[in-house]
Structure formats: structure tokens, C-alpha cells
Length: 353
Ligand code: F0G
Image (cartoon, rainbow, N blue to C red; front, side, top):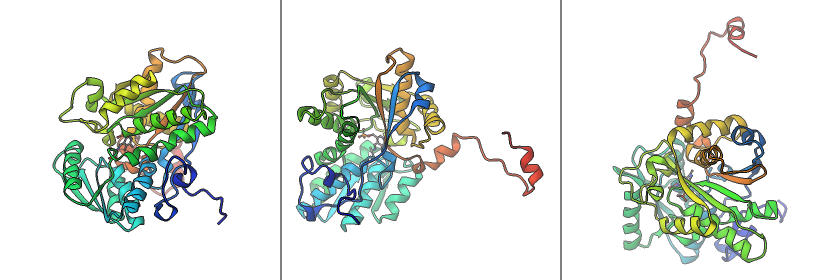
């Protein structure tokens, strides 16, 4: 392999992510597509300069890999033997994979029955100790904080600043691509780590003179799990977008600061709006993202309907996770396949071209 081949975000962005070479734990995450989506824009608001940052193409299928490579590398540097996290699914998949790569023990605590099938299969396959609690993500996070306080286990949720440092590289990639920051950046908000990390990345590039502007950050929560929008903790959050089923985000304060400092907004989208955008994305952009990811697009649709954008505005939507992680929702929200006898005449008779 050539010495210049792509080797993950830590080696790509060494200055922002300092660590000794021997401690780097990577699955060569990052360098994800930033795809122009004119056909999707046509459906939403003709003239919108719309791009999709498809984080579903990271090694474990979500943006969490960017944070996990740095958090796990730093844990290894410290000599940690174990890592732990609470998760709605993707963090646990990433922790399990990077922990396996590093030879660490991994403990993940998840809400029972509320994790998309693909994500659960990832945590199990990578050999993590998986504990399902009869409760929600917020309760799982409280428990894992106690575990981290009382043991030598490294907490790898987004309360760990190394996670955010790794995740900011998605903003670097976007600015490197355009040689500038976009006007707007839309993304789903759960625990609010990612919106914080992107803003950190945009601010860093601006301060270093690598961009001349910063985007307005547009964050979207699912209506049934929208504590930041409501201004109060949601005790029993509910949404089809299980990845962002969070009622008390750990990075709540910083999300408000990002909103205000960027001149952006944090709004809510309904499950119906999320599912409509989930399908729009698959049909008009060719990207299959999980429901939570579609919240970013649903938010842009909602704002477009309110007359928020003008023609030519450049908007980047982050698609945070791959659609294959959640086959149940994909199948439940699609027309079902027809079953027929193995007979050409009968098969051809139902095909409409
Ligand atoms: N999209 C997906 C697919 C996610 O998995 C998450 C969070 C988010 C968006 C929201 O990001 O929390 O930084 O605001 N998933 C976490 C997890 C909570 O445990 O996998 P956030």
C-alpha cells in the first residue's frame, strides 16, 4: 500500500488531534462523501445548493467513528483497560468496534428494545458486554457515569471532549471541499454532541483563516424528544428515530450556545416529517440513511416551506447514520414485495415499465 493512502482522521488532521503514532486506534474512518443533491433540492426548494455529508459510509456506519477513533486512542495513551458508554445504538457499535481493534474490554448500556437491529448486532459481534436496561438513554447515561466514577473505565460518550475533537473533522472536510464554509449546516440533535463538535470545527477553521465565514447551524430534534426546543426535560421521550430518542441531552448548554453564536436555530420535526424525508432521500438522492439522519432533511423541508431560504443558498445536511442499521423501519415504511409463482407470464403481467 502506498504511504500516502488515506489512513483515517487522526493522521489526516494531525495538528487538531495530537497523539503519538503508537497510540493511534483507527479503522480509517472519515473522508466521507459530500454529495451534491440537485434532484432532492428540486423536491424541496428549487435553486437550493444542497449537499449531503454521508456519514453512514464510516466503518461502523455512523459519524460516531470520528469521535471514537480519538477517544479510544486517548484512552489507550492513558493505559485504560476498559471503555464504557450509554447509547441509543450507534455509539455502542462504534465503541465496540474500536475497543475490539484496541483489545480493550467494552461495556455498553442501552435501553432495552429501543435499539435498531443492525446496531445491536454490531455491538454483539464485536464482543462488547451489552447490558439492556428497562429504561431510556438518559437513565443509561446516568448509570454509566456512576460506573466511570467508580472504576478505571474510560467513558466514551460525547461528554468526553476527545469525542467532540474527533467529530469536528467532518466540518474540516466540508471546508476543505468547498475551500470555504457553507451558509447553512443542518443536522439532527440528540445528546447535542455533534452540533457542538461541528461548530468547534467551523470555528477552528475560521480562526485559522481556512474559511472566511461560519455557517448558521440548524439543529433538529424529533418532536417527541425535543427538550431543547421545549426548554424542559422530556421524561419519556418517544420517536421513530430511535437514535435521537433523548429527553435530557448531556450537551444541552453548549447546543444553545452554538445556536446563538452561529445565529442558527434548533427546531423540532414530527415523526411523519422525518419518515417523509427518509423516503425522499432514498428516492431522490440515492442515499439510504437511518430515520434520525433524515431529521436534518426534514428540518430543511420545514424551513423551506416557511420561506426561510433563497435560491442559491448553500446548505449541507449531515446524514449521520446508514439506513441498513435499521432494516425494520425501512421495510415498515416501504411497499411490500409481491410474491408470485416462478412463471414468466405472471411475473411480466404485473411489471409496469
Ligand atoms: N444521528 C444518529 C444516527 C445518532 O446515532 C445520533 C446520536 C444523533 C444523530 C445525534 O447526535 O447525540 O451528538 O446530538 N446517537 C447517540 C448514540 C446518542 O448513542 O448512538 P448527538
